[in-house]
Amino acid sequence: MTKFFLVLHVLAAIVAVGPVTVAASMFPPGARRALADPGDQRAAETLRLLHRICRVYAGLGIAVPVLGFATAMSMGVLSDAWLIASMALTGIAAAVLLALVLPRQEELLEAVEAGAGTDAITEVAATTDTIGTTGTTGTAATTGIAANPRATVRLAMFTGIFNLLWATVTILMIVRPGSTTGA
Image 1 (tube, rainbow, N blue to C red):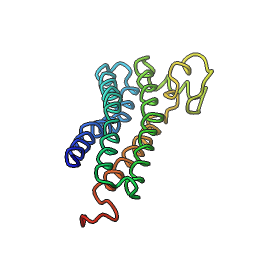
Image 2: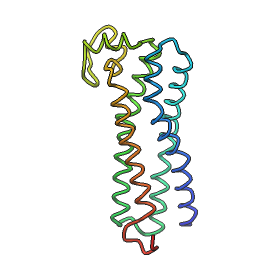
Image 3: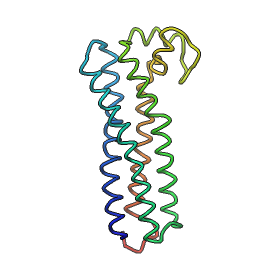
Image 4: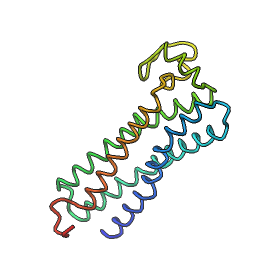
């Protein structure tokens, strides 16, 4: 049963987490292109697709820790430090994705769909320069975080953190410090 859970866990990680890491990494440069040319419908469609991939596969990604937990239980390694560290990093990665990446993608996508080009973003940036400012009126309320011209840079940073966390978890899963497999 352990091998069955392990196979499912690895497949879920590849199928669910892989697309999120790639699509999330492609989103910030795509958003910069779309914001620079508000009339480019293809760029806006690409952003919608990338965001949808991130949302859908993030939901499917819940299978990865569930199957990982089942695998760890069947292997009897739930108390091993490498597994506890992996679970903590997985939780942090999920929090980064849900709290920092996906909401900013949505706000940038809304700005692109509203036709907020570079001029509108720069104009609104004079009104607000903080992430998540609320209570503003006019264009700033519509574009939210996209009002800041550095929004795509921040999104890229959060996406990089998310990807780095998953890379670290992957390394811990393969190397398994203290393992007797010789890896």
